[in-house]
Structures are given as C-alpha cells and as structure tokens.
Amino acid sequence: MQLENMQSGRLIKRYKRFLADIELDDGRQLTVHCPNTGSMKNCADPGSEVWIQDSGNLKRKYLFGWELVQVEGRFWACINTGRANALIREAIETGVIRELQGYDQIRQEVKYGDESSRIDLLLDASQRSLCYVEIKNVTLLEPGGIGAFPDAVTTRGAKHLRELMLMVAQGHRAVLIFCVPHTGIQQVRPADHIDPAYGQLLRQAVTAGVEVYAYGATITPQQVTISHSLPVKL
Image 1: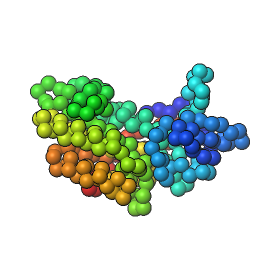
Image 2 (image 1 turned 45 degrees about the vertical axis):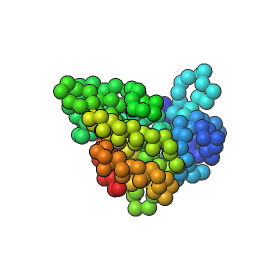
Image 3 (image 1 turned 120 degrees about the vertical axis):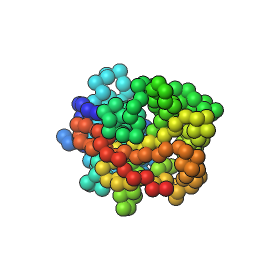
Image 4 (image 1 turned 135 degrees about the vertical axis):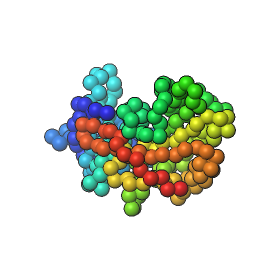
C-alpha cells in the first residue's frame, strides 16, 4: 500500500482519542486527525518521530491524518487502524497470505452471525466452504518482541470471537488474522494482563476450530506492505 503526500514531524501529544498535536520539521505546529480509537499504548510517546498524510481535502476540519510513528527510536508502526482490512486484502490478492489462497471472490462488511456483526472479509469459491475472516490490528509492543492484543479491554473483540465460533459450528471456515504493522513485533500473544477474558475466549475459539494467523509488515514513510508471517503463541 502506497502512502502519498507524507510529511514528517514530532508528536507533541495525543488527546481526545481522535486528535494529536504535531510539530513539523520546519517548526510549525498542527492539530491532526488520529485514526485510532485504541489506547495506542507505547505508540504515542511525546517527542516520537511521526509521519502525517495531507488528505488534500480542504473540506475536512483537520487536513492531515497521522499515519506512522517511530517506536523506541528504532521501530516503525502504522497507527491508522483503518488500513488493516485493506492491507490484509492486498496480501491475500498478491499471494502473501498462503493460508487464504484459492478463493474466487472477496466481499467486505457482510452481515453475519447472531449478534448483529459484519465480517471484515468473506471469501467464496465454488465447491468450497465460505471463509469468514476477522482482522485485528496489533501495535502494542512489549519486551522480547511480543505483540499483545488487545491494548485495552474489548467487548467487541469478544463478540467477534463468538461469531467466528458460530460459523465453524455451522460448517464454515472461520479465520482470525492479526495484522501487525509494527516492525518491532516478532510474535503475537493475547494480552491476558489487559483483558484476560479475551485471552480465555481466544483459546476457546481455537479449540472450537477457529484458525488464527499473524502477519507482519515492511514499513517505510512511503509504503506499508504485509510481507511475512509471525508466530501466534497462545
């Protein structure tokens, strides 16, 4: 995925979930949109190098959106969670995600389940079971290269696990993919210390037949690309 019209600066602070103040390299200060509703734990330290994107849309209240941050002065992370689905779809279509090849059609945001959910991606092919793919974005880096999910208690994430288990029970294929646009993360684990209920339910889902994979990314200020698989430790 190409990133265009990017500018670099330093993070002053992130606040009100959707806003961040940035100091550009030329000394100007801007308030930009922060496209991440999570806690952004370890990804929003003041003084971090950041890259923001000029939307080119003068009708927007905040012309720029925050895209990348340098973590610990050496790793890159894409904090725009709105890109996760497109990154994973691109990786399926280019053959990077080997486990999800052989499908003829990819649909997005299809209603499913018993809890008023929409699946991120629905893969379809003749003479094959439907494949329901739920995508979760992982940017919480912990010691030892561990990527932990979630970074805050997630009732929505638990709902999605229940829906995936239901799809397996109905004879379909159900897959959870951790999208990891963070160059410092080497493996993914449930964040039991943050949301133990989610970790317990994730292990239950795997036992029920839900497949779980994680894929990392190559990141530059001009491009984010899903490039390699990562181990998931339960």
